[in-house]
Image (cartoon, rainbow, N blue to C red):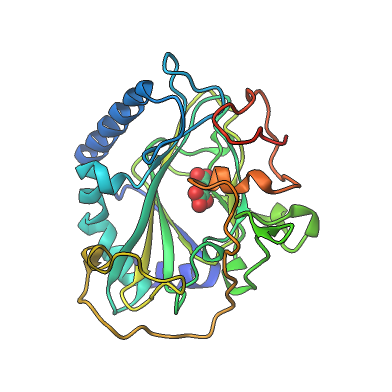
Length: 302
Ligand SMILES: O=C(O)CCC(=O)C(=O)O
């Protein structure tokens, strides 16, 4: 549970970091499952439904950038999506209509080359009938300035939904040359392994390359209030309702006027935000020391 002042701060700034949410047992089991998934990437040579690969990945030296939808294929990640200390915080932040898991992923930034993520708002990817939605960042390693922590622009969740298109096609990133937001005012969400960050779905956020000699593994769960329904439609009603981790099913979406954009036409490169953002013409974050991206359908442009 968090305090009233934490809830107020989340609504005011759009984010919150809560230390020590995970206990040592579940943190160890989650890390063990992740190590196994990464080792198993030795059997793949290109992106799959489970793996998004870093440039330079080979079966001999697996380089995994993202594990997709871990809760769907590895039980401990579903267990963690239902972890009461986290769900209680979500109930406090998302309101009384329940809590629904929307999606999950693990972004791995390996020492020295782990890829940056360009500035974006999650809301631009999946607008809903109301914006009581957030992403939880479960820190599986200590997150510090040099290993590419998540960075958020405080207060940006109260602003517009910015253009995430490039040449009229969705690219999942904001063009920094438009200077719509003061990216220099972003704050890093740092903390010890076992801490969790919570950032609002409309928050402008991104992260730099890992330039340290330590990994940065961040498990991201995206949650919505029980009565926030996706404007782009529900593909699987049963799965949608199985994902309710708190509260009871409703057929009555709550509709609140919020600034939305639709992510159409779809990004030409699919599978992960890294692929989507390939077509962003002007990058904000520097990349250094990355090999040409043989796994991407086109070479990285930087
Ligand atoms: O891993 C990160 O640092 C940022 C990830 C993110 O914002 C996303 O995948 O939507």
